[in-house]
Length: 415
Image 1 (tube, rainbow, N blue to C red):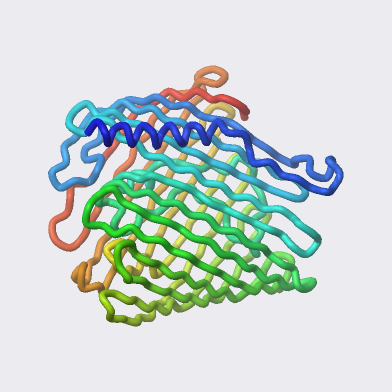
Image 2: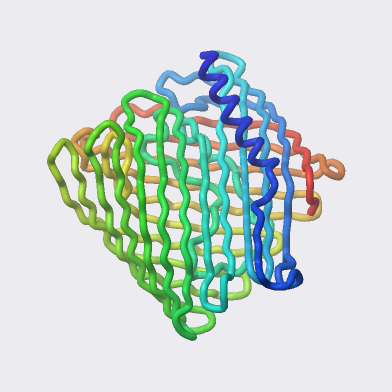
């Protein structure tokens, strides 16, 4: 247990170091005034809280526990005529006042775009996270500090929460990912997008296979009007599993559409087919599945509201392939100069026809809310409440109901 606790402490300390590191340097041949930011924000929120959780790790024999919690969430966002960058880091440590002892989770994400020329726009994004029993899915990790009109030809920026995969509830999971690419304007109304990257997932528990995925993506986009565009996208990824020759390949062509409904509302969506080939123990298997995704978002100076739906095929640990369907809604609202509220809810469904998991089906439900009120200057206080439930083949663990009171102190920008 002491070794495990040191491991968690080191992980948390690493994220704190990232939060305090300077922003990535950018160079340009343009005059300095061309790169002056149209909007920027840099801050860190330090949070201390006390609360109670009825089953924090969704264990079958889980007990309720009171806890003390310390956390930090740091955000840096910058937007200029030629570039935009957002960085968000979150780290949290909780001490449970019974058998659970100290636990930590963390997440770091980054997204940047740069206008290389009149016709080429480069982009990159990446992240590193350490989750425990899917708890990151019920934390408010990212709030857009600088509202922007989305560029429909490029991948979206980080979202508020991240859905856990099928085996995230089995214990601690680490995920590292990165991608880079470019959007190229090929005509007055047409663009192509090319990108590639990879991810690495590993677990501390036994019985789960670590794996590495590499992926490429290409898309074509045609602007029908100043507000609406349609396109075609093809993505391909290959996953290799540690300590074996097992691997999977997934190719997913999709038709896409996006439209700007008004100054504040935008809609994006896509539908296609996923072709999967799985190689395990020298035998191969092929499958075909419907895939889709869609979102509708409202953005303003004081509010961010997004609803999302998605269905995809994904490679998992234990050399398994799963079809995942999710519906999520997230809302951030600045009520006035002193009060803010956040709400998040979602459901994820996992289905696999794999023999090892015996046609496994699972549903994960979550809901969370947070209220914060400024006390004076940089100090604020509030309350968090959340609930999580896991429903699957066979017996189900008890749900987790959590509530806490907190104090928060902001370093950096105010507003």
